[in-house]
Length: 90
Image 1: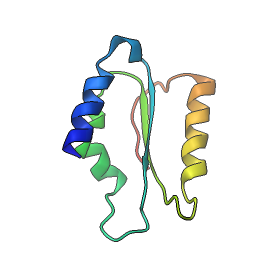
Image 2: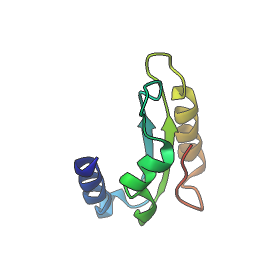
Image 3: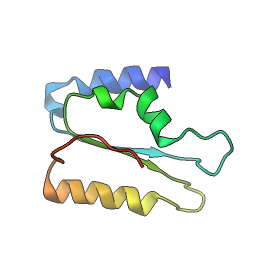
């Protein structure tokens, strides 16, 4: 997670990504010890992102659980623009 956080924060500093919409799919939620959305939010320092909207969606690719919800959120953000208050986890 440290490397992922470092890379994400570095990328998100790019001026060309101002107002970007970020969907984090927290996969493998069916496994014991899976991180919660709050833990992922903290470890990736998502609340420190200066711009754009972000969302952490729990998923299980094996069953498809959570995938539709995450993509629905993304589609909603794209169609309505950036959310007024950035950041959320689910």
